Length: 160
Length: 160
Image 1 (cartoon, each protein chain N blue to C red):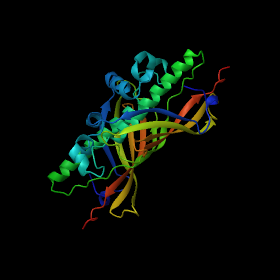
Image 2 (cartoon, chains in turn purple, blue):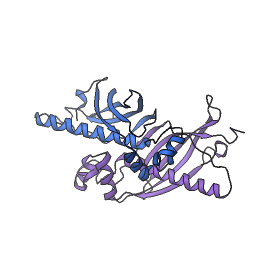
Image 3 (cartoon, rainbow over the protein chains, first blue to last red):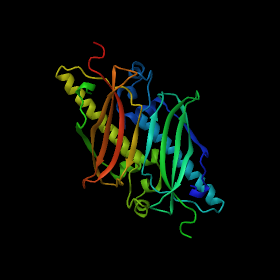
Image 4 (tube, helix red, strand yellow):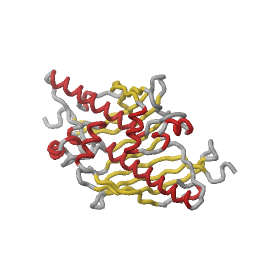
């Protein structure tokens, strides 16, 4: 987890990939999005998706998982180098979530994150506000997912 | 599932409530958002959340589950009355997701959905475009979650 001062607009990071198996798609859907095209192959084929399709909330949750575990491994590496590790604030929400193409059973989606804007907080000068675009791309190179996230990131010398 | 012509701006529907137990919070977090304040009571208490807090993606996914099951029970009731049931299109995404207050272990969140705008699609005249505000309110009446969703809804006489 980096500090605000370590970030630059345009910095991009690959955070990992995930294969959406039929089992994983159905398991998530049964719990959180029990629509027929997320639960059954034949219903998926008959739908506009053209196959058993992952819930959009599943795609977003998998992206979150990969962002968190990537951030944690970056933090461990920084700590091992003896660097100070930033503790990020909670996210207030996000903008412009788009499910661009269906994610079908068997698809492998690779996620990345790119910094779109950086500004300091007027109300809370010890924090910076980062807007990052998270995207998911399938094994054919097609963009399937895009989200503009907002995060509060601590400034390096806030408490010095 | 209603047709475009049956909808009016301002229509509001309570879709159900859910109690976020510590177990459910930790189970979701382990799979999709393994941050310490979502996994451990003590870490939650030490964090800005002030307690074991549900992942924002968990809150959003639970809201989705309640919207889907409410829509399905409405569709069953309409079919039982002999009415034609609309088949909604896939959602292209949404705007303005906000996690307004933490959802802590033991909190019960009631979700509702209100229609904010309605317009017909120029490109696809057989569909209407609905913007609906989904919100979650805790047992103290505090707003904790808000999402502006976009959906394609079929027009009643599109194929007649």
